[in-house]
Image (cartoon, rainbow, N blue to C red; front, side, top):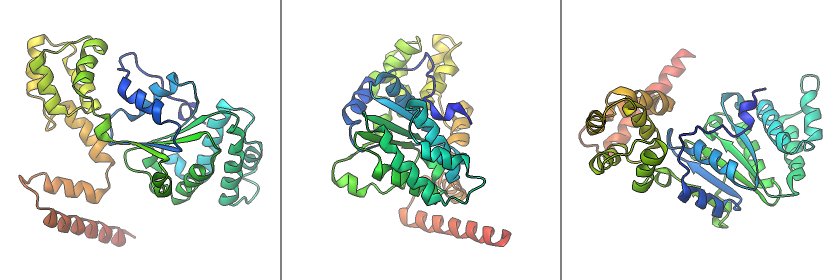
Amino acid sequence: MRVGKIQPPTLRAEVLSRARLLDWLDAKIHRRVVTVVAEAGYGKTTLLADFARRTRIRVIWHQLDDDDRDIVTFIRYQLAACRRVVPEVGETTAGLLRDIGTLATPADVLVDTFVRELAGLSDQPTILVFDDVQALERAPEVQRALREIVARAPDRTTVVLSGRRRPSVGLARLRTHGEVAELSADDLRFDHDETEALFRDTYHRPLDRDSLAALERRTDGWAASLNLVRAAIRDRSDTEARRFIRELSAAEGPLYDYLAEEVVGDLDRPLQSFLMRTALLVEVDVALAMVAAETDRGSTEASIDAAE
């Protein structure tokens, strides 16, 4: 078992505490569900880890990955995360997991047992963080388990769902009752004051007004790009740093590499193909773009059928 999956990540020293977002979380954390949804590099995990180390509410952390698409693995790690904070919770679930290789325990029984035993967390407010929920997109059985956790977790429990795409856990009813708080990419973008403070106080590399304005135009407050810029200008003179920022582009260099590996590389093949084709155009007609997207999807499905 990888311990790093069930504890908040250690933050680097060079992380800006974002007071406006921490205050927002502090105000909203008593809702039933909090979602933090944005593409790669917007600082979702960093923000939640910073909040976890500051809040007085106990936090149970589960970093999801492809292994969690297996329902037994998901419950095993989720139970370990709970018991890391509340050691006595989940005795019956633990027994089922120990016997999983010898007894034919149905998945729904395992999930139901675990969710019922979450009542052991009801003695005080608790935050259940599920980070990288997009890892469960092709795991309907685990998604159902997550929906059960959201629906049946004890009172005073908040479920935080963080990921690159909106999780499929059925939040409509809770949303109508005002029990869902949502952070988006627009909220997570660094604003002017945060960008200035990041380079001045955290990176110890203050930027002049023109460089700061140019950086804001070219990065649009995207946390990953700000960090890449900081790494790129670390050993450059002020003149060289200003030139680098003026010429910053996503068409080459470290920003291009990050986009290719972490953003585009995470997308489904039809969407990758669609983006590559439409990126060549100066203007995009929505109707024609939809036709192109359907064509890409059909070609991919035909290729899969032929392979099978």
